[in-house]
Length: 257
Image (cartoon, rainbow, N blue to C red; front, side, top):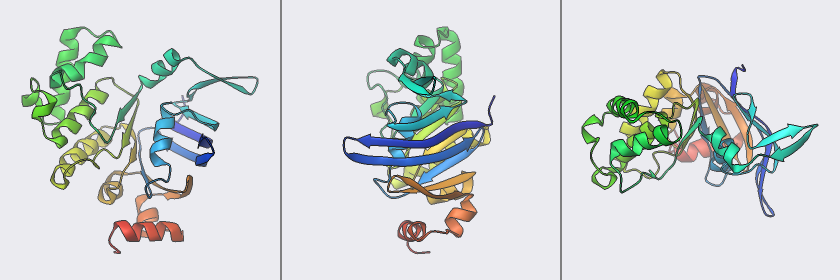
């Protein structure tokens, strides 16, 4: 049992000739929230997708809960695991994307209970009870029988979070979960995420919401150009950044204050 939920060691990711991640070292302790910030194209989303092997790392090693992700190691050599084994690793890692990715032809409750029933073999009655409990947590129990098209973007994203949590993951990944939302809907999604954090869920969040990072993160990591430029507590990174690149970025997103 390790204290680290994510342990990235010198992680590289190339797309052809283009190096997107250039040796990322990043640790996320169990039960903590880490916010990844940085300009577009800095590799944040790519790193997130490497954590659950949606992207294959080109070099280095990435562990989740002590388990090597996407590969097995024998005598110092890495062998890629099968897609089936990768999918199995992914079951324990919840992911919420920018786009809500709900099944349009299924109701809200059907969206939530499908994976626990299919993947974990949960009986329908249990899955439904769990689904309703999670909908209550995200404030949408009255929408259980609605279809995604009948919901606002913020409501759809809250359902997407409930759907990910229904698998009882040990780790939640969020890829700019509020960037596709109208500004007035952002708060309701961040509120749900704040609740998850208070419940002790380990979270890695790519975000532009500096207020959320300041308030909820245990660790803020600033990435630029495929490397970690600096990391630390919100107070250290957001209020007293050590690097010019971090200062410039924060100046641009915070409107200079």
